[in-house]
Figure 1 (tube, helix red, strand yellow):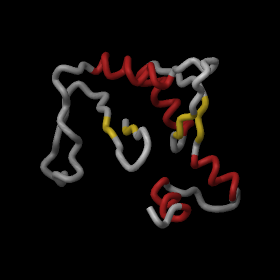
Figure 2: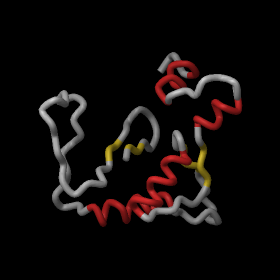
Figure 3: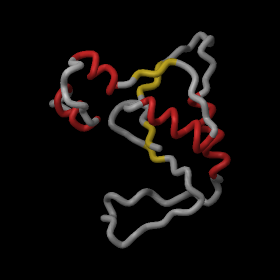
Length: 117
């Protein structure tokens, strides 16, 4: 699971107990090492707390997730996390702009709509 709180920084949250690195992966693409002090249960607790915020609080915010439907299904089935709150899906936004176009990847959307980035 990757998370970005803004800007260009992204953070990786592993939901695995152990980390297997194959020899085929470039060092630049390898995931960061797991923190032995942080159990999967604790990681899931924090992920759940972010994704199940009360929608009736004063500080409402939206969370942007590419392919929300797939992420929702995966988190619910694999981690028993139901997502609550306000979510935005760039995949749906792209479809609304041009329903007849081919489905875009996130990389393609960024390249197309934010070429200066």
